Length: 224
Image (cartoon, rainbow, N blue to C red; front, side, top):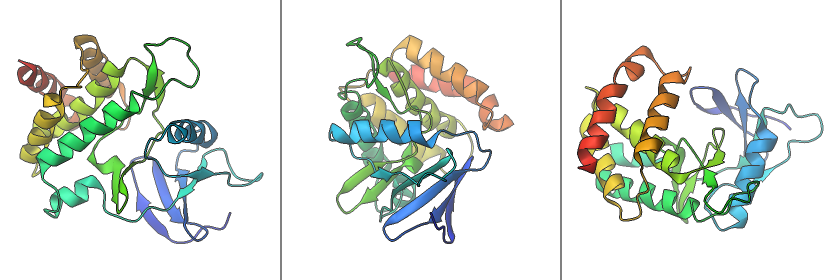
């Protein structure tokens, strides 16, 4: 697979232009599993969930290379920063995307209470295309209790809201809208697990870890 110019970079991976209509995401540390991630994406896509199409990078491609459909549109975060989307609407969209995801059956487990979990659904992992939002970055996906997924998204937003950065206030509005959704399935156990996982996440900065207790309290206060 030929790669073109670098068009994006996250905490652990870079995204390059590939063939027409496609991009290549490459894990910098070489520890990702593109085949497993792509299988999850194809599973949820087969059930109508909005994700990019994926395809094989070929027999010589490293297992960390994920080839996926190139999407056109801003991230939800960019749209909020530009004033094209209100933080309240962003929180509502995140809630809807979690609700729709948890209607998709698990791809391995036969337990009816187990669902596919994204575990990193936040405004920078949603692309707003002309056909609607599309969810990217499924590298953390697992199967489990939806409460953990709701807890993870809530903690991510609360970490920003509890900080002193320019997005603190908008993130608080997003968090309130997320938790106000009637379908919100956040549980005390899901929140506790999400906080533990974020604390143990090696990509977290010291400041992001230090704000976790305040983030947890903020979420609990919004739950009443």
